[in-house]
Length: 98
Image (tube, rainbow, N blue to C red):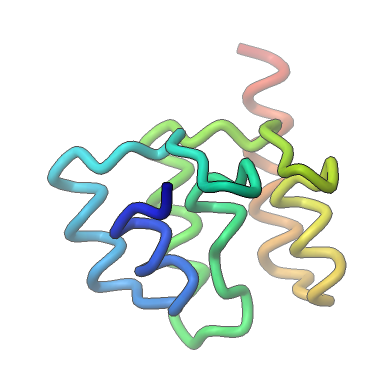
């Protein structure tokens, strides 16, 4: 099942992502490949740092894996996106200590 939030994330649309998340979109919804919205995020989009931060602040778990056993951190590293990797590592560290 591909939700509107999956679509907004895959397009890298921060405004739509923000709107959907603010109105209660399911951050844990999985599509057919077991990908949650944050795993679908287009890390090459212009505004993705804001959106990734917003999704994580709303409680999206970063430890979830897709059918290829990849987390959001794997995908960000594969995309050579150091800033998102840094954001994800900071969140992971906070989640480990809470």
